[in-house]
Length: 100
Image 1 (cartoon, rainbow, N blue to C red):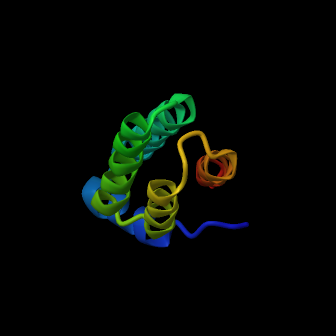
Image 2: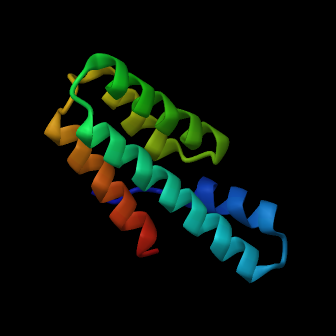
């Protein structure tokens, strides 16, 4: 599955202006934040922790106009804690985003 990052890239570009180093830093920070929340989600064993991590992912997605991530976060919100298909999909998103 391929994830669309067009709106996200446009948001990051608008924030960075003509500064490619700033764009790289914003992109790296976004990936790092998403990766951290996915790690927390993967290690969650109760509804509360799972929900908090999923809500944080949804907030990141909304802040950066990452529609695909928002859909994945919404899927996580309706899934049981530790649901492996959700975690795998989120990891695919990270992998696809970080490679371009």
